[in-house]
Length: 453
Image 1 (spheres, rainbow, N blue to C red):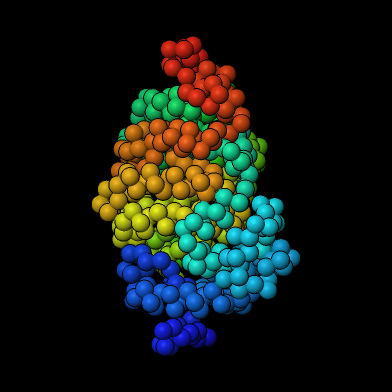
Image 2 (cartoon, helix red, strand yellow):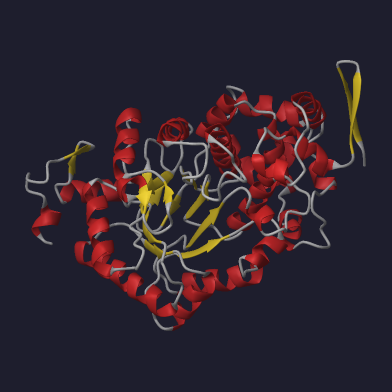
């Protein structure tokens, strides 16, 4: 099916829905690298004009990736909730944007609508939104999940404490965890990216965190961000795993490049749930460009594929999902402006699809970005109601070699916006005399955590 419009007395034609979606996307280096991007700003506006006039129902009838060839597409189509879709079924993409922005559209409306939206629908509407639209609409969404702490409540901002170490040294990791706890971080989870993806290393790190959480009765959960098959082996060995982690993507081929499929994720979900340690037991990470980097993008733009990854995530009711927005590098998101836009898009799409979205506000050292860009994105995401961010010692991950957000950054955002930690964790911080009234206490003021170390 071809799509056409006339703009400034010139006719524009697009071969298929994939081309309309790609050329309507704000400029980014990954789509240019793939040869999918609009050649000019005028062509981009023409594609957005076509996209804005498409009925939302069009995305149920036309797929950007074949149903027969891709299990992610089959998941999207087969789990679509037609009843939930009814309130917006008669709208175009442009009208849907106006509906989302309407005063009368409430958090309860968006929660009820979520199962009726497909990733392609939310990707499409994001492409005709300004940044302020992405922020305002996402701020209306509320997605709650729970393990030992409750994530996503209004007025709350959680932090994943990320104490990575280049050799997985337990003492160094423990010191970073202590540092993060002293700054009130860790209520989303304590999550370690292991330097080696072995069962033995994973079990060592899991036991380290499990013992710490039990000893100090910390209302949080732990995760070693190893491959899902490593977690399965560790669980078979009786390892007390809280959250099972996996990187996921928006096509079957890209997931195969990660060494996974939906069946494997379902197996891990069943295994982790059977341990009876908590309610939401999965943690997923995503990022624009992963399908392009593995040559499995199938001619679809990276932002639409990112939204499709969220369909994979929501099938398994995760505790946490986050887009590692600038991690892959400038080949996919060139500079601070592109990283900022992508972070707002990802958070918007994930929230509309009913996911507990966090964002790793980050960049690589060879990108045209710096910490000022990240401060701006962090602040915008805070206004948009992001569920959680990363807490990395000094904002510099010494194992993964990229720049993220620090323990101090979390304090900045909580102070600026009046956000507090998860309620269970906040009560623990007060009990341990680490905080009072959402303020950090001096470490020499009767700090019970340091007294017991």
